[in-house]
Length: 66
Image 1 (cartoon, helix red, strand yellow):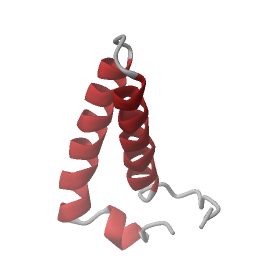
Image 2 (cartoon, rainbow, N blue to C red; image 1 turned 90 degrees about the horizontal axis):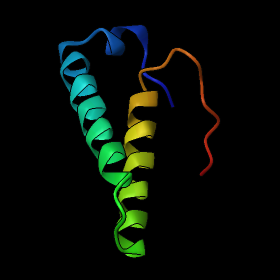
Image 3 (tube, rainbow, N blue to C red; image 1 turned 180 degrees about the horizontal axis):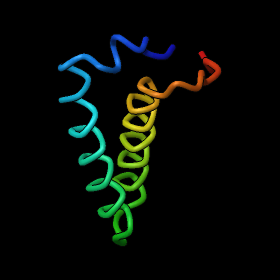
């Protein structure tokens, strides 16, 4: 699934995308720390989900894995 041009230019998406990108940057920075394996794996899952959400705004379709 990807957003339409209208959805990508909506005020809601314009507000959400930078929020997702900032969270992604924080999680990536935190992921560089040495921590428990479970904490790291949980964070990597969050990173993957945020990347998927941000990808919704791409104009290139991504194949669904589900």
